[in-house]
Length: 272
Length: 346
Ligand SMILES: Nc1ncnc2c1ncn2[C@@H]1O[C@H](COP(=O)(O)OP(=O)(O)OP(=O)(O)O)[C@@H](O)[C@H]1O
Ligand SMILES: Nc1ncnc2c1ncn2[C@@H]1O[C@H](COP(=O)(O)OP(=O)(O)OP(=O)(O)O)[C@@H](O)[C@H]1O
Ligand code: SF4
Ligand SMILES: [Mg+2]
Ligand SMILES: [Mg+2]
Image 1 (tube, rainbow over the protein chains, first blue to last red):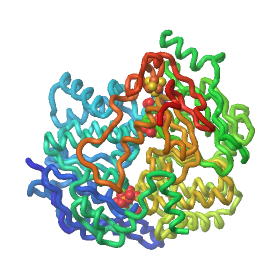
Image 2: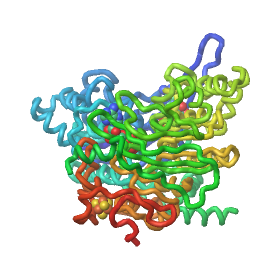
Image 3: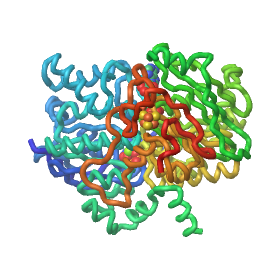
Image 4: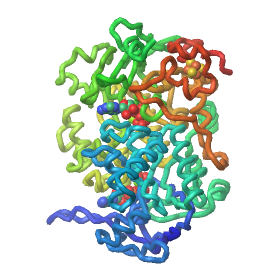
């Protein structure tokens, strides 16, 4: 298995409301999107809040099915959600969710959750699992914290527990949805270095959704820019930043916060 | 000195408190003072002797390593220290009132009306089984005495003000039907609804694209100019700090290790941890490859901090005297740092 994910002509429509006298509303979260993630590639996804990035990520990870369109991993279509084949497939494609507290089970320690994930996919014996769990927690900067429950962790610690649980399965592809957004820049740097090491060693590919354009620029090989359910621009990372073509991409780059207060004042003077 | 003695020193009733760092020429009214706050379990202190202050119209940013106690400090300031943690020492006063003297009813009254917090995990903080428009309207009914009819109308205006497209129909959505950034904006709308005197925002814009974030920061600054609210902004994004802060407090392993006016902090950080943070930044404006600089090692567990300076084992400047804990002390007008060598860094 090498890990090429292909999404073809994906559409996702959410319908809601629809009580007897209430009009139905529908939201077109993803509107005819095509993307391809090569093995060992990092594809950055940036765009407007609400533009469909998480929805697209869940579809790429195979945990939500599109209204129409086709998803495949190494040429094989994703199995039906809930089937045994689908469960096996999930080991190869993991997702790190945007809301870590929802992704963790409040009744189990984080160590037990990481162990359970390994067990579900038949990875090693009990002792091997414990050693692996501890190694993984140390790698994400939570050494010896396997005995904690999620409510005993800070926001960034929860996020790293979710990262450890996804990476411990040695997936081919990881969908990272704002996976480092709750981390201070130093811990963020450590996690990004870890993701890049795993990519270099095992050829893991990442679909990396983030609002932090500094992080996206550093980590991505290619970038796709989304707005209102549509990909408006794709290209090599360096090219998108050096030479943005679409108006929306330009407005996004123009809104990057100032690096220093002095830079902010200089900008405010220019505008005034 | 044993670790136990160090803890006794830091949290015991007779210890010397760190004075509250103040700007050289205080003008506006003080809204919140946190004085010598220590929060923890029976076994470990998670927030240690934290002293901060915010004045009307001022914005204080709290930054620091994941797990260093930023959220717990904010929760304590709202009188919301989560069980089984307790406030072991320190005083919190809000507009001159000591919070610990208020009963639960009085506190509930103040929260939401005079002080509001945007929680780090917006989706979890919203009620999953109520429409978001109703949740905003409820705040207006309870705290501002509006009728439900008026409140529902105003809720839609508030949703529009936080850049939610099609607010009329989005008001009817449940939280799980909205994106991460939309939930954050609903929380922001709820916090702004009552025009509080103190607004605490804990990683409130992490799920917003930079364009929307810029709009929201602008909205908050405008409201602040209008109402004179004091704001505490917890963020790891040093770009957001550059955009919005007047002062910055940097925390490490439970303590405030540096406190300065924003320009001083960016131009001449005086604590090695802060200097390390500045060096790890990734900029959208410049190309970077390979491994990113990071501060080596991990933050010590609160139950096993090293003796002396808690940054000692990771600090590139550590020296013999660092076995003694450095006090947070003024370096120059309004710039405080807790390092034996503070003031020596160019
Ligand atoms: N109930 C608890 N029992 C034990 N430790 C706890 C508990 N709640 C929080 N902690 C610990 O307290 C420390 C401070 O947590 P806090 O949430 O304030 O961190 P933070 O600075 O907000 O971090 P982040 O940036 O990751 O959100 C963390 O190390 C966390 O593990
Ligand atoms: N379960 C659902 N039911 C109804 N609508 C939904 C559902 N999930 C998402 N949506 C809608 O789909 C659109 C896209 O949401 P999505 O979460 O994919 O956005 P996003 O790009 O990840 O945004 P953010 O950056 O704010 O996280 C939004 O309009 C959202 O309200
Ligand atoms: S006191 Fe010593 S160990 Fe601590 S930050 Fe300063 S130089 Fe580093
Ligand atoms: Mg999202
Ligand atoms: Mg926090």
